[in-house]
Figure 1 (tube, rainbow, N blue to C red):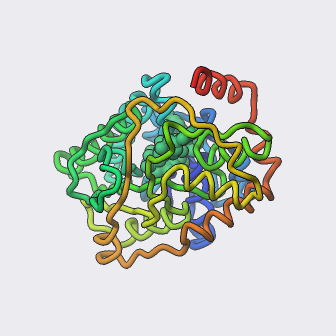
Figure 2 (cartoon, protein in one colour; figure 1 turned 90 degrees about the horizontal axis):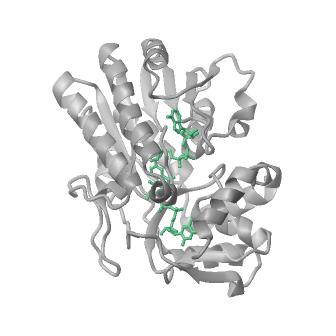
Length: 335
Ligand code: NAD
Ligand code: DAU
């Protein structure tokens, strides 16, 4: 199988490339990535000289480039995106450009060359659930995105469905909850709190820390994507969740405990505008129809993740660049 993976130098995409080569050593992978601040070729060092792996630096919005790459693959798996909610509040334009316009460009090429297309999406398209309820997102939940990020992902999901209905594109979509694990970019909750604690800095928890996310190990997410690629019904949307709802405060306290630090580092700061209260996914349809299950529970998954960051200090220290520190200052000043 010849895969075109977009955004394969990011957190989930690079883990997916590791997953594919471990499971299907004979597969061929082309990784198309623009190498934004979030793309990192250090995530894929061991494949650099592998003949079945090719890296192409480029934009999913580049028509000629995408046309040639799509013509030469069997399947496109689209991970490429601007992915950080806080950055979408600072500057939404790039989110529309990549997540909406870029995805549409991939869809055009997939239709033209009659290729199978899988789109990686998020539970954030469904908006916010009330705290302290048992309600969960299902594939039937209406879209109600809150941030420019989630609105751009919702738009891209709609485009994928419209290309399937109108042009007969062979497409599937997965909407997943919050991922954690190796190679996550350092702006996201778990690595950010880990690094701040390591550096003896305060841990900025938005609002009162009661917002809830449903945490899934990235390997379980990617195993779910793989199952959908193999057995998913064309035209379907599948939800993948961690079945591990935790408040942000619980997550931060777990990190501190695993690091042997105390809670005095926690600082409550000004809330994120439009901050969704709670996400929770009901994955039972995906589990029943496709036989997908999770390998990691939150406790052992977090232990492994903290151990991974401990063992890869060079990896995360390199990311503390001038640009990143400038972003950090801007994001957290006045909070
Ligand atoms: P990430 O920010 O770590 O990686 C995104 C990658 O896309 C980077 O390598 C970046 O260089 C690349 N990219 C950005 N714009 C591009 C463009 N125009 N052309 C080519 N490449 C481009 O993101 P992630 O956390 O790995 O998320 C991957 C996908 O999964 C996204 O579509 C995101 O919406 C979705 N998702 C993420 C989570 C999560 O918890 N992180 C959960 C559910 C869904
Ligand atoms: O639910 C899936 C989504 O999960 C993905 O679609 C997004 O790409 C991914 O970034 C993630 O979005 P979140 O906004 O939930 O993730 P983030 O790590 O930014 O924040 C998780 C929670 O922690 C959220 O409620 C905000 C809070 N938070 C975050 C940061 C960075 C803090 O309290 N302090 C922080 O410094």
